[in-house]
Length: 540
Figure 1 (cartoon, helix red, strand yellow):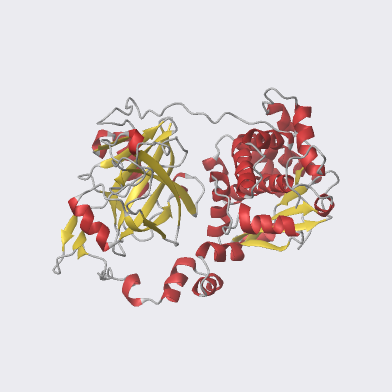
Figure 2 (cartoon, rainbow, N blue to C red):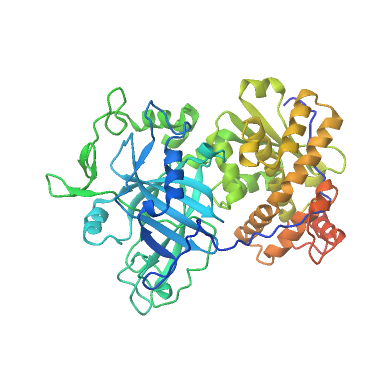
């Protein structure tokens, strides 16, 4: 690996603070959720009642990033079918039935848009392939719990947000039975009493369908209501389009191609390949991934996400076992994965973009007092569009026996640096974060002249920008501690040591230290770094 001049240094001996993440109840113009039946979480309504949401959905369908042909739109809204609207104090999610123009398989698609404080925060498509049993039951009862597979489709680039590979979604169910057993589990509607409702959260990914089977007997029943605490994920439910009956008498889905059921095979659009009927699994994988190594890995029986990790995340030059396994299994891997919005965004960036590798190593070539550094690749690699973003962790730091919590903090901190560098190099930094004009200018100047002085300016501006990520970093660190069994670590302690990690940076002046002093926060971070008797994290 060539030596890189610029170092986004993690001067990690001390420092940082958290911004409040509490949100006011969402309002879309003058609309507020009204009690309808027996709960005020859910309503069904025609999308024409929400012109701003409809307009935004139509705008997304025309996005150039989505259009792979000369079609004028990527999908059309099925306006005659009501939208599903879920609202709580953390936001309002609209689920809209759509018909994709290039419908390529038996199934249906929904557009999901989540609003926070009256503005769209995230949007994506869910592609469902139902079981025949589900469709047959759906005709008789529209709140039948979905059975089949669901696949996530990112459309984040259409509005300048980061492309994701996976998304956490929540579905709310209801059961009217008393006692511990539930024999009528169904999708919750506006007529379901909150005491009989619960929420289940699922990670859904691109090109890796997730099987969903909600059996009778799942959930709480008995009026516990334990699952209705607000969570930050979009709340949705499957909305099939119009159904029909085919010649065999099976329920199918009405499309322009006819009445399609589970064993139907759609004829190809003129000029297109019939993906469902003509290609082998390997050929289909190559069309989706455009990477033989990934397809060889997948067809050998490995999961798509693990194969993408092996291809796009380089950890072979990270000799420290504790740090390497932490990345491979928890922070970015999926065998014992930690799933937060921040870590999912970082996974999605580097899993999805095969031209960019997140390269980890440990080395002595880290400036004094720095625990880690994140570097731009050589300019020729950047200009070619195939480049590394390099995270170097200090060998001296790792050899000094820091706690697992300290190593996780260092890695999460550096991966946020990598996320900002990626957004900048891909030209999306200001589209995603309009407030980071000074950071962009500092990167521009550094890449024109990679002097130490320009590098320090870019580093300082990066740390100031990262104040916005303290809440996400703290939560990700806490969920890591929880995932690996450090049950003595609470969220507040993680917040304190994340804040303390910024102590020797200009960002510390912008951080709210709460009831602590900056020095108090620094000392907590230092305890984990040096694994003192006051450290709470586990040994490696």
